[in-house]
Length: 545
Ligand SMILES: [Zn+2]
Image (cartoon, rainbow, N blue to C red):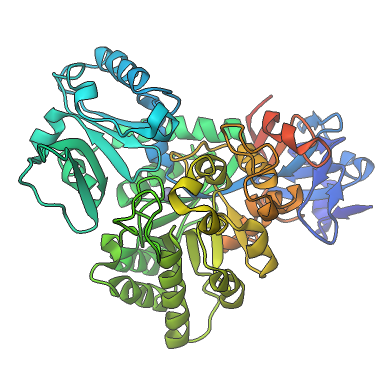
């Protein structure tokens, strides 16, 4: 069996890259497996048996023998904060700090390496790892950072810890009122801010942090690109501030991108993207505009995700609506306008009520604007009432989800939600069964970028504390093939990219990964020990030799 380009010349002229002796899962339902692949330049020109593809080898062809290894279409991450993640790679790593003392110690060591006055940001701390899950306070780090302002994010980005210097610069005192959509956490006795700022209250500090310049953004992008190559990510659907878009653009113009970027800029400024697409077009295979992203609510970890019922462990609140939808209904107007302009709309919704409102807005706008291929998306779709699971399928709304978050939140979500409501968490199986398109991603920097970790989490639903070996809510497990599909074919669909990528087919981009073990055949518990041997983007090997 061989499938060659019908264009005759390509059957005789040599390939620039040939991959032999592989077990290639193509993602193409009509020809699911192949042994060999040939690419010329950026595109696949042959796929099929070793003998058929070998004919395309000449002295200049790069030949890689996979020795029977598994190859997949390159992983497409449906939700990244890519350049921000690059900044986090270059900053202090607090993600694995297991105690408040370790947290403080790492901040102190990092501060000692930087010149006085320079801000420390990032961190990705997680108090849910600490004994007692107490939130950190400014006192923990003040004595280590007297010479500089500090603002350290929780790993979900929905709260941060400011030191006293940062609070001073931001003008936050015990008299400062909570801004809409945000909370300044205070000491219950003195009313003094503890340093923790939740959701939109973070903006009070963020606006006094000096804007990063183009050189710094380029450095962060470079760091992020090498991490992507290491873990097999060949395309991202990014949440992209306009300054980041400029950094991508420069990198793309210099032909240094090794990841394809689908940029989703803030929904509140949708006209800006509409104008740019109208005047210059959406972009090319490396950098493309077309999506917008808005927030409906906060996060579960910060008790700011918007639910119908109050939290079990914080009964005075059921979460927050975020400023994108304040006053309520503002977001719907933006969706209506952006959709009319032909742009794809993505809404961040975590709590069940946030998802319910987002689905309502999508349903109403689709009716008002008339039928078209719009592919609305909900980012996270983390907790759903059962009627809404069905609506994803009925309305054709893409569920853009991050399985690693399930492995992470599964450690403590039941405490926050109660046992019955916790069952509504990360309903991968139910969503697929409802006919919904499931597109997977990481939410990097919030979670690790590695799609292997995501596949492991979706298939086993084990939690990262090892306490759920049979899976947290095991009825929502999906198969390896379904999880791989959510990182490849379905993810390509989620960015209107399915004609170009997401599967290995003649004529499509030669983006693929080669893995150290066959995740379709090994014990699912071992999936997370899999390594990426080669990452190939546009026929070029960007990682592995
Ligand atoms: Zn995100």
